[in-house]
Image (cartoon, rainbow, N blue to C red; front, side, top):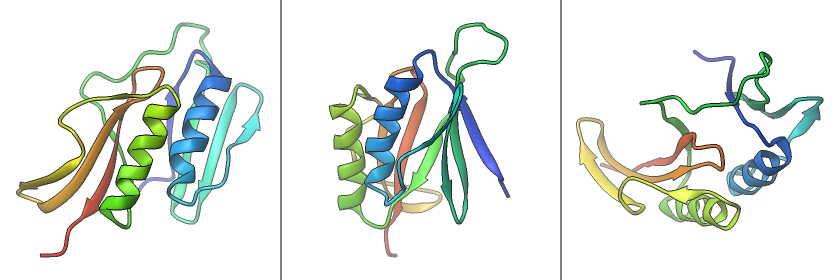
Length: 126
């Protein structure tokens, strides 16, 4: 459905260090730097971070969350730990299992250094 997702940052070097660490836990190679943007390319899509083209400060989406697929709860925990160690802050409830309309999910939430809300998600077996 998606070709790419792009979010904003005011500090590209800090964003690269943060996302290289958290996405590295998912097996994603370090970002390719293209001037004022960084790109993480995978077979299923592209995630990128950019300084706003209009020159205004970057702002996080109110109500927005970007989710990253994980293969296990342990991978989600490693993702979360890497994020906290690299300038992210935990948000929502602590990492763990949530039961809802989508079944049993293992979720871990962070705010990146720019305040964007991101999530590691593992779908638990029924």
